[in-house]
Image (cartoon, rainbow, N blue to C red):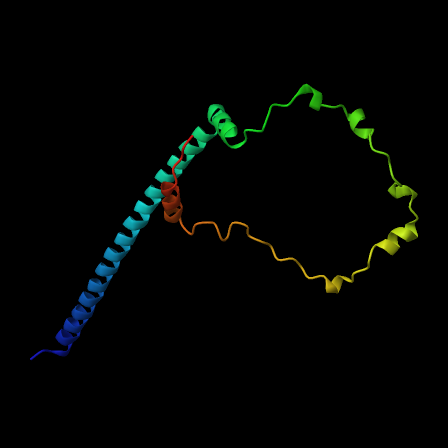
Length: 151
């Protein structure tokens, strides 16, 4: 029959075999995950490269001029008559009303209602892009591919 040490060694070998079996399949799963992440990184880098190329193209002066003529036909160049000096800006063609320094200080306080600080609720920051922003680059690329760029 088996001696006590042989039984312990056999039991130990079985547990080590089961442990190695589990570790092997965990490593295989992690390698698959790693390859998936690497593929996603390459796709994102390619998408960034394409977006940079599109941005460069759209920022060319000829392209901007074509877009300006297409979407802003009423926009015209600045005329030299539209430029004024600082002195021209300080003299107003409109009649001046009673200025702030001639008002009585008590009258200014009487016009401004007093609101205690505890009644004012802090404003919540608004994320303007939360509703329109795609959740992932894939969703963004799907929307970009759906649109046709015509210049």
